Image (cartoon, rainbow, N blue to C red):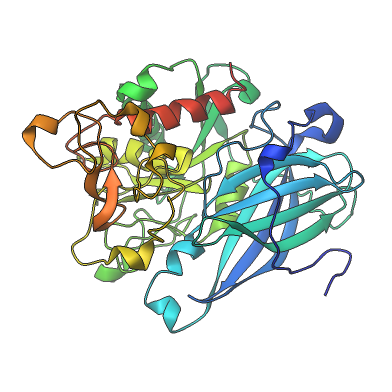
Amino acid sequence: MKTKYFVFVLLGCLSLQMFAQASFDDYFLPKTMRFDYNIAGNAYEQHVYFEQIREEPFWGGPMKNLLDPFDFGDYRYLVFDSESNQLIFSRGYSDLFFEWQDTDEAKKISRSFYSSVVFPYPKKSVKLQIDHRKSNMEWEMIYEFDIDPASYFVNSDKTPDYKTRKFYDSGAPSEKVDIVIIPDAYTKRQMRKFHKDSKRFINYFFACPTFAKYPDKFNFWVVDAPSQDKGPDIPGKDVWNRTILNTHFYTFDSERYLTTRDVQSIRDLAGCVPYDQIYILVNSKKYGGGGIYNFYNLCSSDHPASDKVFTHEFGHAFAALADEYAYENTPPEELYNLSVEPFQVNITTLADFDKKWKNLVDSGVPIPTPSENKYKGKIGAFEGAGYVKTKIYRPMADCKMRSNARDEFCPVCEKAIIEMIKFYCDGK
């Protein structure tokens, strides 16, 4: 059924490579349109339901690179000019609902998750399309929505009245990677601690060799948004606190997985400044974090390993890098279609290794690569990655995406991060 604003379909979509970059000034204003929705379902189905459209005062993204060339993510959204049907904006992303679909709970019940996408504010009517990536890596449209930017139903309330600060300034947001750090579980009296923690983590960020090469490519913002209580929820310990973003450990029954489902509050706070990436700094000594591609990052503030977790999670959320560690008993067939390559650049099924990092492998390094000392420090294809012990391979024996023992990204991961930095900086 199709109305002025809604249609639910299951169709294929043309490759984005067929389209040229659009002109920002022809189609957009330098502020943000935020489209909020709920995605609901279970392990076997999903449905999208409109929630609200919101106008926000800043656009922090690039103004030249409007179309996403990377093809990363479990979802993507496309914005078409309604009159010409030209594709004028696109991004890939992932969300918490997709991860939940792989849980045992999703096989028993249905749930809904709040979600959100953002794009420059259109001058004229547009069509928003959301696609889901199937197990064979092909795209399937799951939602379409017609948007009139002049409609009085667009929520134009002012952003929340919190102080904002720019702690690290490299230049214009459209030519830099803008990271907004949002506090959770810091009380009003702890805002000074939040500022000190934020500056400490910015130093951690540039201590990582990959980011140390590009100190002039990033801006860091903070939003002073206090919580009533200090400390996040820890359900496994029966700890429940009143915090502004409702962060919690034990996501999907994994103690160290720190997330939140309060996406609306996250976006409301992030919208106080221009941003490309959202980083939630959680006031806790407990080990944990989380990072979801083009969705959000989280890290606890005061664990001894938080510096390494901070940049590890950023690898997920910024460059769609996969975890390279493995659990004991997960069959790879439960998580992967082994006949195709996963979209993450740093893991492979070897189904089409030419499209991965084969060109970086020295002659004489066997594929798959044995876990032997003579190959330590070499690029190859080492078995065990993406949460499984067999049939999924990683580029090196160790990497920041595998363990805290190494504070460096391997060359494959670093290449993906550098390409993403250049994209968000409009190639500058």
